[in-house]
Image 1 (cartoon, rainbow, N blue to C red):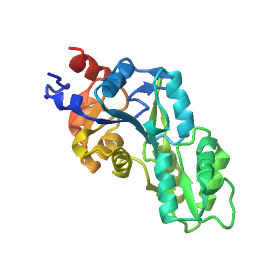
Image 2 (cartoon, helix red, strand yellow):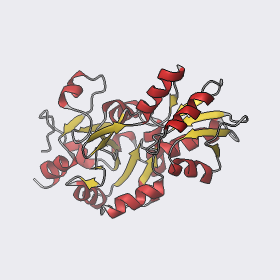
Image 3 (cartoon, rainbow, N blue to C red):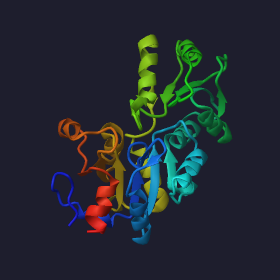
Length: 274
C-alpha cells in the first residue's frame, strides 16, 4: 500500500492515466534532476499512461524545455508540454485578435509570441493595445522603467503567472509575481494572471488527451499555483516537498493537496518498488 507523509492511503495515485507535472522544484532544480523522476515516468508509460509538464515558467519556450529535459535524460517532445506562455497565446488570440502587445519578458517569450502570430513589441509605441509581463530572467532597470511608463495608459494588463519565487540550487529567485509586485509598488496597477492556479492549464491538456477528471493527477511543489490548479480543475493533487511548500505551510493553507510526499522519488520507491 502506498502511503503519503500523513499516513494516508495513496494507492489510487498509481492508477492515474494522465500525470501533470510542475517542473521547477518538482522534477528538478536548475540543471539537477531529482532522483526517481525517470523511473516514475517510465512506470507511467509502462502502465499505459501519459505525462505532461505543465509549467508556469514563461522564461523558456517549449523548444527550450524539450532541449533541457532531453539533456537531463527525459524522453519528451512537444506533446509532453503545456506552458503558461501557450495558455497566454490562447487567451490573446481568443480575446484580443490582432492586438499589439507590449511584452516585458525574455527573448524566448517574445519570439514565441511572434512565432504564433502575436504582434509584439518591447518598445513604448503609440499603437500598443495590451501589456504583458512574464517571468523575465533577463530583466533590466530599463525594462522596468519602460513598463512603468506604459502602465500609465489605460490598457488591459496581463501576466503569465503569479509565482512569487522560482526554486534554484541555492534557494529561490524572484518570479513573475514578485516582478509584478515591484511594478504595482511603482504604478498601483495589478495584472490579470493567466497560468496556474487557473483550471484552464489542466483542462486544456486533459481534453487534448481525452482523459476524465478521475484519471488525472497534478503533481507540484507550490500550494497557491500547482495544488490550487488541481483543486480548481477538480482533479487529484499531490504536493511534493522538494521545492517551495513545507509541511507547516500545508497545515495552514486553504489549498489542501490530496496527498503529500517528500519527493517524486517517494511515490516510486514507496509504491511501485515496494
